[in-house]
Image (cartoon, rainbow, N blue to C red; front, side, top):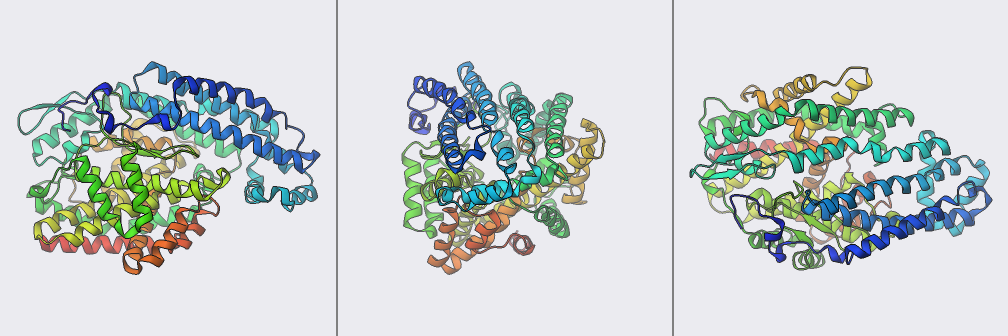
Length: 598
């Protein structure tokens, strides 16, 4: 499917839409279950002040809370995924808003638990830990105890819980502006045809062999964002302040520490990533110099940064071809993995094409007890093929985890999530390279692989450094002005891309359009995940079945262990700089090979 303008939702063929009725059979059922959750909230709150009365109350509370949370999760996902089909639909805007309000009420209803539990006499608390009736929850309780110094009084936790809905305002405002309100107009392509510029189509324009098209799209895109610099800047500053507030009241040394602690990741992992990537910036600078020569341009601009150095191999793919490539690329994962992959392809897990009002980007999501879902905005380029296997990596990770773990421990941490998705990408790329016999095709694929390193390991680390700087500035009492943030971002681009990259004025605005910045300190996990995935894909291809078995154990782990320990099961240690160093060494080798090929 190839349209010059996005389709209306009603125009998308049914075979390319996900089936949300597997999640919740109808809107009427949604509304009925919504009332049920509201009725269950008092059943949770009634345990307040009674945890000291005996282990039976603790057990009953945890069972009732999980029952309520599981129903709530299904409804929350259903409401938001319906909204993401078309952000302009008032009904689902209302559903999503109701779920946001209910989330705050649910958090408030159970907010007393940790503080009340931790206020118990030590002897009683540890007797609960050793009680067999709570055996299933021992790990959960140990994690609560570990957070003791960051847990507030019951009354304070209730106030914090009540603030949750308000705290999401910055993200909500940005999402509505970015996904529903911003309009970028049309760009004339190389054939003289006018095509609408959208957030999803921007990358396709940046990959155009026609430099004029790339430049027009780049300048137009950031011209629009620049018009909203103050608005988005205020929204992002509010998000940073929110994180600073919560880290301060919870007695963390920084918002970075608070964010990483939720995944049980030491801050040293974050800092080591930035340090290691910065040490290896010369390889990136060499690649930019190679791009400048390969493109034959006097100046290499950011609108030249995504076009292939081998444009005559810039292929387009149908969605059916993308699925077939996924099957072949992931064959080393074995029959069981492929069976699950096929189930996703044939049973309406995936919402494939862009339509008017559809949420931008791509993701995998779902609820415990039902199959996962994948949202795409498939345009038919090679990036979209890799996005498919990436999101199916998330989806199958969820499937394995949900089948192996109870609801309590099925929710894996984001740190390991990006490993599962990116390992799929690495396997697909290595399959494609193994099948390539033509010199120019190999150059094209290596160029694409290098750009995955550039976009995931280097660029996401640059994003991570931008976030760290912004949050530190706020913590030190500095004002977060749009111009100040633009200057920080401009300087980072100078450092990361080197002297052969022209630092266009527009690139200083790029931070305005990054939605992940509203989920603070998230993006670094793309870089660590990519590094781990390179190591694990190498092991799978080299060792075969034993490596796959270890990897599947990792996928089944959920959050039954901390992320660092789970990755060690699969065969990689992310507390060491070695995985990042090895990935960057491969990047340098690929740049050298590409230089020979072109």
